[in-house]
Image 1: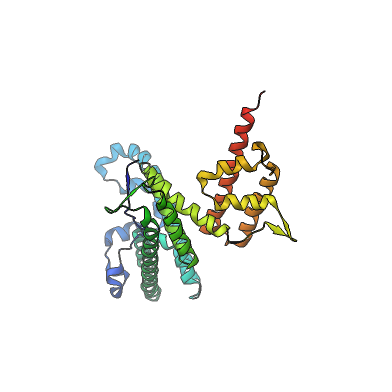
Image 2: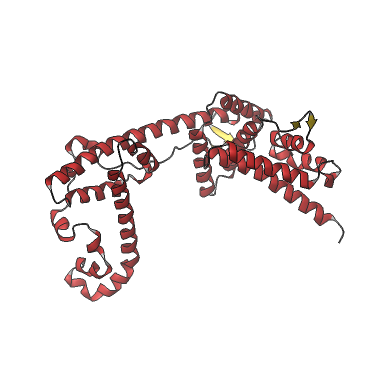
Length: 342
């Protein structure tokens, strides 16, 4: 396979259109007064029956076709406006202590459409006091969003640097990554670097989020199988290291062979799983039954779910790694059964 580019692009975060003039207030950004007065940018004036009022009289002959053609767009716009309004109302209705948490949870929602709708809502205020309240809140909210975006960008840049360092052993002089690596020892060095970074506490949720984002992008592009394999390998090494921290193979002075066997698989490379399973399971002449192995895999998944933060990238990666072992077991057993004479 040819070389894979080693350039890593961080997350895209939307930037709003008002940051350059926060001190001037949100209404410094002009909207056509006529448009505001006519349609008020309110939900009640965007019903289906009012679409034709925005069409020039010279085009009335085509009005019906245009209405049907634009029906989906109008409904989509309505839905988007309603969602933005719900978020605005939620932000204005919570206390100052809760606000940063809600802003962080909805950071991707603060795009140009959000701020345009906020400006429209400000213009619709009936009293001067209400209007000033909206303007003050907008300024405060913009500053908070700016801080979160900067913090997130800094974290992403740091995560990208860590990922580059992990991949350095398989990176060529010309900044290209060849997959599979040209030197067998490169993977050993790559794994060693990852283990060191994990022990130093550098492989946090920000790092896992960055690797997952780049993996999704590589899969979506469809033309970077080498990069997909590399990033998957990084996550496999990570899962192997974390799951190997704790052993369940010894209880009351006795060795639980199925647990010991599973831990051997967890520590091994995916490329060697088939050989380990063939030699270890009774199907291939080993001493571990399929039922015992399935049982300890399920227990390990349950323990992982209990010991990790619900919904975290770490939880997802560790469980997917264990399920990958389970899938490999199922495939191997199916192959054994297909070889049996009918």
